[in-house]
Length: 91
Image (cartoon, rainbow, N blue to C red; front, side, top):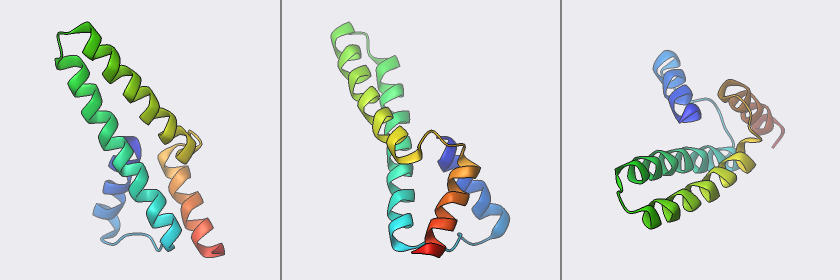
């Protein structure tokens, strides 16, 4: 949950959220939702004892990871937020 944690710290430090466009807000919330889903799937996978269920959860987590990589271009959280702010200014 790299982006989620980073964004949370930015809010704590600045006391307000960055000025993002509607499209960038959607992207941010999608990233946060996917990171939360990844965390949830990882917890479930490790708690399961059934190898078949573990495999299914692992496959689902790989799909979510792929979606997350597509949204973030595998950028570091600080760089990603900066890109989103810049994109908002152009939109």
